Length: 482
Image (cartoon, rainbow, N blue to C red; front, top):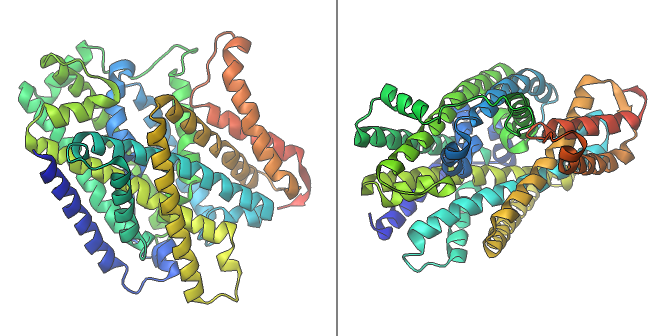
């Protein structure tokens, strides 16, 4: 499969997205852009959210982790499943009760303007870092395996991809994304299944035979019982639950799709359907990872980690499989970026500059403001992606992911204090609390092995961060109910 054919497929794929955009964005308003006029079909939202949640990093990295961590990641997935129930039956009723467009408006209702803008600011910083990092990692794979061969520079690839995303999201926003994410999730899962079926066929194995070989190789180990290990099963399950609550339930990008559904009941059906699909899909990713390691060993190849899936699919499988892999990778790339730019635009317009609070603005003036912000975030994404390329350092990637993760802890603490207590707070100190808590969490994380007899925090650090924020809010509480 030549790079020119792969590039042609990329452009044709984008053409399909653009057609969907033109059909769904006809007569779009700001309300369409932010909430799809609260008319999105719940089953489409549920299916499309799978692609948004998994992203290109999952598509490439989860199979690669099986070599070192076996199926331990499934512990986190179990935690995710538990967390989705909290999102469906605690947070969604809250968002529908207040008829929110931005979920952070709840913090204004509950505590005041400072807490509201702090929550929105935390989301904007975290989502910008996380989304641009994921975008960079996937663009880099496309660059290495397709566009370098054609002599296309990285900056041009990044500009092309972001221009594509901008064109099909610029007018319709969420109203368009609900449909494009559904299509992209389908192609991503198709690539996943086709690759599994091909490897099984090429190795002459049935599904049960494959499981036996994976088990014999030690790949199917799910639970880790070493309490001091970051992958200890309770740490991973608890951490996974709080990751879902924070990074799905308290994330504007994920929730703007849920609250675009007409009724709370349908939105909850969406969340429960989505959680069941995620269990199955993540298991298939892990199964594929194990099969990729067996396949590499059968071919005498020494490849592992993030290089495993793209190297085998692009260089050691038939051209049609390479093509399907690229389509799947592109399908994983777009949902993790289109929704992020749209959600960041919504949060900045509504939460930071208060576009909806200024009643003197006409619909057209608000639309111009929204489009300007949308363009600005696309430009910021391009700058960030080029910066990551300049660094070309996996340690930088790790640091930035850690920083992004710490921003969700204060959000968790703010919402938990609002939901589970009736206290007001001295709102002018809310930003201080949300800065001090992650700082203390960071210090605890880096010194825990020394202070706690070798104990190392894993994903549960998110919950610790939220607890420290909750404690800080308790300190600044005031008399009276919220």
